[in-house]
Length: 287
Image 1: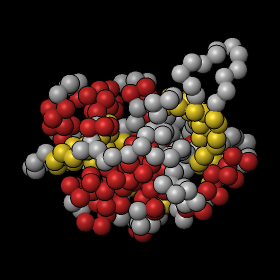
Image 2: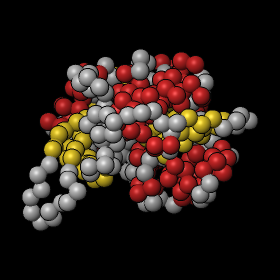
Image 3: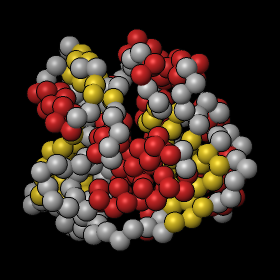
Image 4: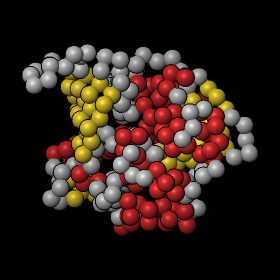
């Protein structure tokens, strides 16, 4: 996806002009996670599609620059996906996505799995009605290959478009859930975060919950809850914070299979992400 990010003031002049700082960046949850995995020292591959347009050229070039492998899947006759993101002075972001070329993913888009150790799956892919059947077929193929799936259900706004029972049915196919506190409460229907953790563990063997300024907690079946505070960071833009957390977690887990170590690594990577504008590592920017 292409991200168009506008840093806007407190007051927006609707129907008129509001001066703001606007920039474009490569985005998309899977691409962001793959980029932070690679930045953390682990090879990654992103499965996504772009349109045959200037935005598609730009986002594929950015993956090449970051060293992330991809299938170079360019779809004629459609646009590359774009997300318009408004970031307020507190760093909070509001997103307006159009999936475009990424809608309609099928099992044929899945690469040969023998060279991979794990899979990250963005909830956006399953929540998109045009991609759901194909992505569920991918999930079955990944499970048959005995690869762990790290699943992020994504935003409540997107989940609200699909019956909760259907979303919960997907969780049994996943190895690890990585989500924020609001999403965990939404899916578990429990406001106590540790009770929510235990409820979700009934579906998935490991659950990690991001808590923003309160850090993160996690637990695997049969284990104890581990809690860690957030790292100190200057918040500039929260876009991609969750994706960078997932990237840092997965990269660490692949190296050591330790939940606590992976959460600590994830928190540090997320702190780096929120200190810059955009959702990707910026190799030319000192952080």
